[in-house]
Length: 379
Image (cartoon, rainbow, N blue to C red; front, side, top):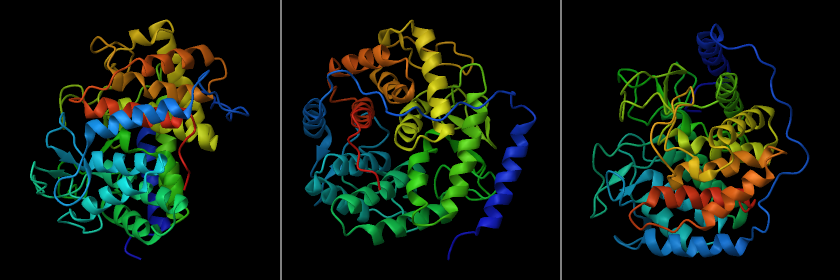
C-alpha cells in the first residue's frame, strides 16, 4: 500500500494529543444521542427539491464539454470545493446525469501532484491555475460523493477507492495526525502543520473506514481534538489550527484565521450530520455544546446569529449571513430540548432567497437542508 500503517498513525495521534493534554479542561463527556433525531415541524422533501431546483439553475453550468458548479464569489470561477459539493448534492438528490457531468469535469482536471486528486482552481475557460494542485476539502467531498453514488446506483467504488487512497497519501499529515490543506503542503512547506477544521469531516472518515480501517485512527484523532474544544467555554472551533491549537493572526486568509469564521461555520453542519447519523458521543457532545452556545448567544432568535465569533463567543460582524445560519440547524438535531429552535432555523432557511452571486451561502444552506431532513444516502 502507498500510505503509512496503523502503528505510525497511532504514534502521530499520541504526539498530537500530548500537545493539547496539558491545556484540556476537565469536563465529563456528553452522553450518547437519544433515540430518535429531531426534524423540523412540517418540513418536506418537496421544500428541499424546490430549493435544489433554484440552486441548480443558478450555479450549474455546462462549459468545456461537461457540467460544473460555478463559484462567482470565490477566487476563481471554478473551485474544487464547489465540484465536491456538487457531487454530494447530486447523489443526495438522485440526479445521476448531473453527478456524471460534474465527475467528468473532475476527472479532466487532475492535480499536478497526484492524478487521483482534483486541481483546486480553474479559470473562466476551465483551465487549471494557481499551481494546479489540490485542496483537501474538495477531495474529501469528491471521494465521499463517489461512495454515495456507488451506494445509490452502483459502479463507482473503484473510483472512490483511488481517491480515498490518494487523500491518505498526500493530504493527511503523519506529524500532526490531522488533515493538511492540500497535496502541496509537503514537509518543507511552512503551512504543512496547519489544518482547517472544516476539513474534519468525521462522517466522511467513518465511511472511508469501510475502504481502509486506518481511517478509524484518523477519525478518532480528529474526534479527540473536537472533544478538547467541546470542553471550552463556547465549544467553538477556529478556522485553522497549527498542531491542534488555534492559529494567531493571519496565517492563510485574514486576521480572524484563529476565530470561528468563514471556514469553521461549516463545522456545525459537518459534525452535526455525523452526530445525527452515527450517534457517536464525540460528535453528539460537540453538537449539543455548540447548540447551547448559539441559543444563549442569540436568545433563540436566528436573526441574531453573528457573522463569525471569537472562540470566547464575541461576535465579529453583524448578521445574519445565511452561510452562518443554516449549519446550526444540523447541530440542533441531537439536542432534545431544541425543537422550537430547529423550527425557527428551518423557517429562516425557507425564507432565504438564493443570491446568484453567493454560491457559497446557497450551497452550504442546501446541504444543511438535505442533512436536516435526513435525505442523504449513507455510504
